[in-house]
Length: 245
Image (cartoon, rainbow, N blue to C red; front, side, top):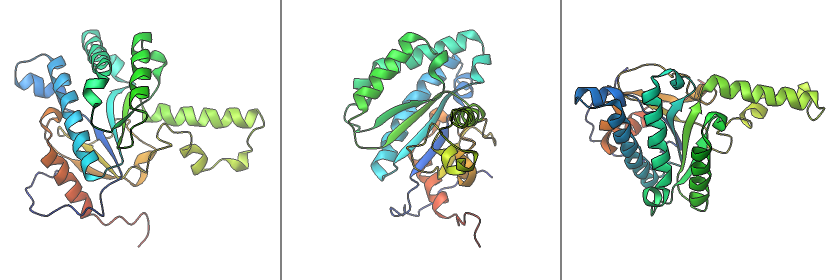
């Protein structure tokens, strides 16, 4: 279902989602509509993310996980992948400017082994720079895939069993959850996907078990604080039963 309606309700500040996942979709379509290269859409998308994160921090959201680059995105044209990596490196290199005064903690989740040494060094610096902040945690999902994440956790458990550090009886949902990249984050309450698509695209598959979904036909670079407010207002109207009556 699409939600694109104006609403005069006010946010219930006692029912703010604690963890919001965002699939930042529509950057390329936004650029194409304007006769711009796809890289321009990705740059504008990065600016939108900063704006939305600042808003979420202000209203009391504890964590935002943003889907920046999937394990499947390597299949895109090399020119686009290179432009995305250059944008990421530039963004991380401006961490003092980008995060100054926000109190936001930056964490990068995903398989960093495929990233260049310079990007990994920039990630380390950015995470260290924001590590003493006390506000919202921004998880940037980079070279991330939900299936790969679950496979990684399962392999870790199998290795522990093989080494005698854990028994088969000790394997549980909780033990798997503790091996996910988001282990230190609250449960995902809300997943937002703009741009008119209706799928998860391998994003937070484990964590999305009881998340609410909100879809919009707005391309991500045009996504505003008002759109986020509407998503949360609609979330607050849901009856979250978690399998109960």
